[in-house]
Length: 519
Image (cartoon, rainbow, N blue to C red; front, side):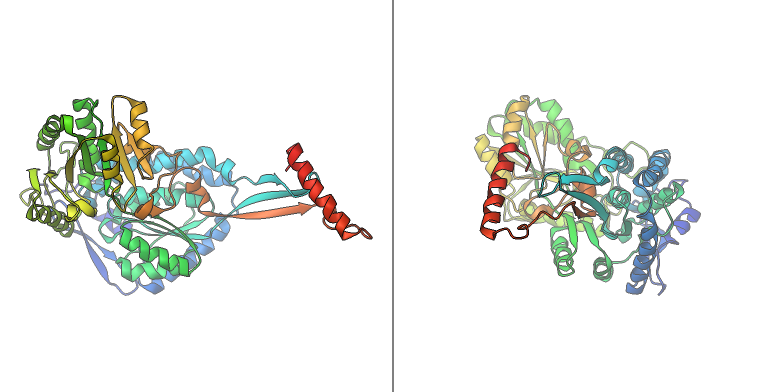
């Protein structure tokens, strides 16, 4: 068991980070090191008055920030890109301390904000530049589309990727000229606080990026009621509540919600290559990835072979509490979440499923550790068969035909991510077209789709509304203002002209403009 936290995570650093969180009543949350359960620091809990004050300060800063030319705003993020990369190991230390994930996942998480920055550093000037369009009267009228920032964006970030979501969702909002108020999860507030300090070191104006902390029911309503737009990542149940409140306030929201993500393995797959790729898709971040795979459909003709290969590799996964790159699996985020994952496995076994490997908590390693678990015989009346487990647990299912596999993959209320594996990419693409999901990876589980920052990433069905990444990942944080110009008063009948004659002329003009392709 790890007993010493990383040298970079000093008491001085921890106190400096939490000092920026408003909490006027003095109420705190004991933020603990997941590997050991040791209390690291007392995190202030923000009151509704604290949140209102944070929005007031953010609005004051945003009024000035929005006046900066886009090029000047981008200079801040050019510097921030370098600072985030140079400080990646300290960030990873904080991520591991607060979330318990293994070192590989912590380092990879630090790469997400720089990747998002890189895309928008290339695209933002074009996306935010005024776009001139034709008006209703050729040559005499025009319309200009002007992108205006929403104002102050409220971001509710989850605990599974606190640094990535806390910063990456804020970056396009800030580039677009908005301010941000973020609410990280109490368990994982340290890494986003550190990231914000690096943005300010790069030149982001103080006050523009605010942080408030507290439990969702205590903080969420006031945050939503003061925001001009809301970005949320989390459960479908909570997403509904946030969407309803945003709707009542007539503000927009983007919701990335739950998933019960399927993988279809076709009968021509290379077993060794598939097994290695699937390990990360199932067990990466100890299964605590919104896009991770929880259902694997294997061809009946090769079921025994592929099942044996998958289970054998899962049994060799190394699990441990370490701040180096040794363990392939780290901890779950909390004892409470460990118990939830365990309850899904226990429910499945009680209803007839078989544990092929794993299935047990590992308190000998740390308080919240759980073994990589492979189930067989999972049905939809089981928790693990119908709802998101969000842990290192996967079910294997045989199928006879590709049509059956597609039907099984789509037999869910969710539609966030899916995966198709085949030696024939064209064959896999044909299957991917039939899957009801916002993201589909071919010969990968999840990373290729999510890391493709030029393409929107979001869910369908009960997995969300809207998307992050791509052009719309920035434009969603803006309103479009239509500035139209008429150079001469030619709309309407001329003085003395019979209106019937005017209508005849107008209708003839519409046909002519269509024929000439001018409108």
